[in-house]
Length: 142
Image (cartoon, rainbow, N blue to C red; front, top):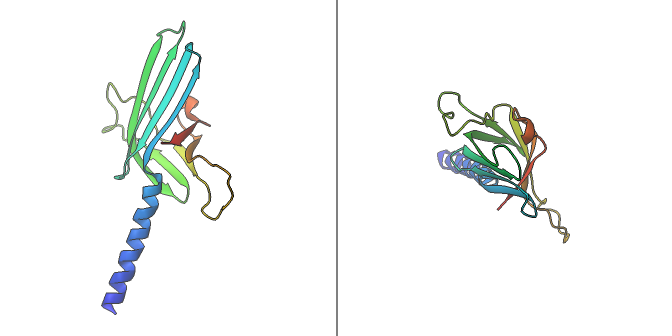
């Protein structure tokens, strides 16, 4: 009986770990207009539940012409929803200024039961965020 319970516990923990593997990785999005404007987003979800975000923009005639913004913190997943949080004491300094508290994204991928030739890029779609320009942004898994 003890062996059976131990085996079930191990299998349960492996399935939880396997699900988090699907979310972890690098996500990116690049928008440009033929050398005039460039906006790039890079998000890394680490296996240990931490994340780092980098936003780069270069606008022709902008003030300043180039802007780098960074954010970091922790992420957690429930179903296909990922919740982001940042600790004011640990995750903010001169470099990391973006506050990801109140940010939530949906993990979108092709359903494993879908056997069609339809291509669905794996992505995170931000649904809510304390950062105004982050809402409705899609970042694609690399």
